Image (cartoon, rainbow, N blue to C red; front, side, top):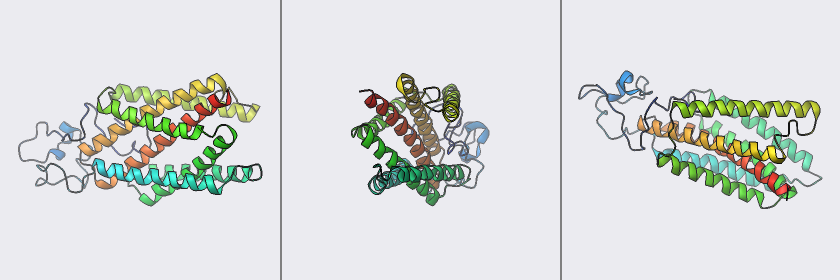
Length: 293
C-alpha cells in the first residue's frame, strides 16, 4: 500500500495487509530456521528484501539492525524540519510586515517562497534518496510563506486566529495518533483508495474554483468563503487527518521492516507537508468564522 503523500509514494514503506506495531518484527513466513527473513520477499512482502540495506544472515536473528530507522530517528528529524518551519515563519512575521506600505512586497516574497518550496518539494519527492539540506531548505521557504500569511490573517482578521489554528493542528495530530495507536483507524487498501479518490476530487474542485476566479473574478465557485468555504475547509482538514494516518502507517512499516536510518528524513518531510496542509485549512476555516462575527 502506498501513501497519498508523494514523499512516501516512491519509498515502499508498506505492506499490503495487516497492521504491525512499532515494535513488531517481520515474519519469516515459510522460511527455514537460520535463513534471513528479509530475503523472503514473496512470503513477507518486505520492500527492503532485495536492496543493499537488507541485513545479512548473521544479523537476521537480531532484534533490530544497527543502522535501522527507529521512532526516535523519525521524531528527531521531524522536530528539526518543523523547527525550521517555525523559526523561519517567526522571522518572516517580524521582518516582512504586512502594513499598507509593505503589503504588496511582503505578499510577493511570500508567493515566491511558496513557489520555491513547491519546486524543492517536488525535486525531493522524485529523488531516490533523502537530501537533508534540500528538505530543510523546503521547510525554510515554507516557513516564510506561512509567516507572512499568518501575519496578514492576524493583522486584518483576528489576532487570535493563528494561535487557534496552531492548537487545532496539534489537536488533529494528537487525535489521529491516538486513534491510530488504538487501532480505531484501520489503514488498509480500502482506506487508501477512499482517501486518494477523495483527495483527487477535492483538488480538482479547488483547481476549477481557482480557474473560474481567475477568469470571472471574485471567489470563483464560492468554495473559499462563506458556508461553502467552511464546508470545504473542514473536508480539507479531514483529508489531512487521513493523510496523517497513511503517514503513520508508512513510518510504522518502515520501522518494522528495518528501513535504513536515513529514511527518517523522508518520514519527517512527509509529516511536515501534511501538517502544513492541515494548518492552512484550519487557518482558512477559522478566518472565515472570525470574519463572519
